[in-house]
Image (tube, rainbow, N blue to C red; front, side):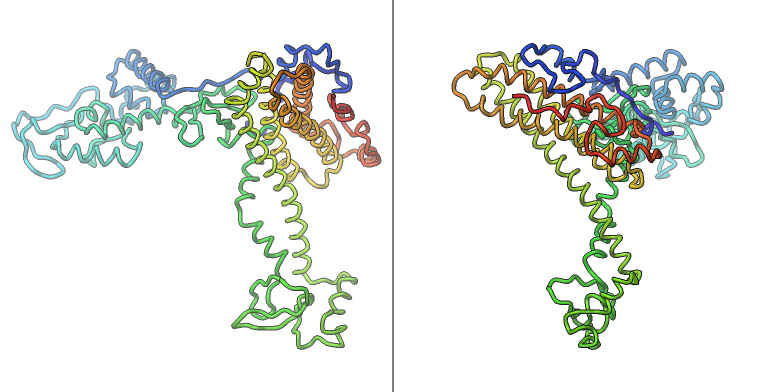
Length: 542
């Protein structure tokens, strides 16, 4: 099983829950403990480190210094070794002490530089001109080239990309490494900056446990704990993403399912289905034609101009009294009743059902994404503007109003989760009726709780924002919003954990369980036992 496919059963924050298992109906709002509700919505323990460019450069220099000290090599040679072994210090040491000679041969390191003649003038092997030795340079191999040719060679290599980090002697028969010492001596300022940039980026891009934040313009990287049970990462730039697949955070959906869903949303297959559902090919020229008027008399466009019946695709000249009249087709109706449609009609029907099913899930996926973005905007306005005004009007510090920010953070997260549950539902096998019913029940329960929380944070809060003087009901509002935040958290945690377990709380192969679940609409009779199964039966807190 791939790492992204393994179920990640994050610990549910159920210990010390603000509400009982029976949900909102059993909550005592008058004795609510605000501290406990805050504990419920606290984020999980962070298992990654956000690195700035300065942090990366510091780690890189530490690794180079360590290799220089342990292997007794120059800084230039240490850079070549680390680049070759993807900045894995342990790997460099293991390979070096296992077979130092072979490592040097592969990378192009020479312990003893080749001695050349003492001639004052030497010939350049690139331009074939003679120059004074002072205007010539060579790597450890002793192949001299004029400084002008060296600069052109180095500049071209750097501008071509990170391959310049493993540069070799220009002599085609030589494998000697060209290190950063020669880059510093011969390259121009701009080329030196690019080389340093390539070196810095290679530290991240060649590593197995460090990745750049994929947000456009972000220059932070993430050092991730490979043994973590969750791939969810939130960068300092506020962008959240899955460290494993670099897509946006998509818990509880697996990375493979996300990839399939994104490809499907961007593919031409749905356009093809739309054409198949909403058009028919002209019987003569085979071009797809969309019916845009009420009658069945179709005329193909020039130069074809073939006239045919939309229902049976037969020539319109053959239609008349024998087919039931000019604007009806008894032959088609008879075939439809007898179930003798041709294959194209059956394909069209299958495509229509497939398109309708995809549209159902995609519209809800897109709607929740739109709601999530709007909630993020509202959260930003609340943090930068409204919270300060509310603090002045209600006579409370902004720290005391943190429960409002927590509620909006919960709304944003729940919209994200709810969005991806629709992708999960699309790929849930249709024949597993019991699982599908259980999934739709949990999804509906969570969505109902989220809508109550969203309405409370958006509309009921507005009354206090519009007030000119402190309102007596604000403390009750605090208790209500805090309670809805914690209960909604529990709803979604139950939903997420159930999906991560593959809805194993029910047995899709048990016909008796399926009959029980389909024979009653009472949530209490749904298969599986979830912690918040009674929560949606409660009335809204007042």
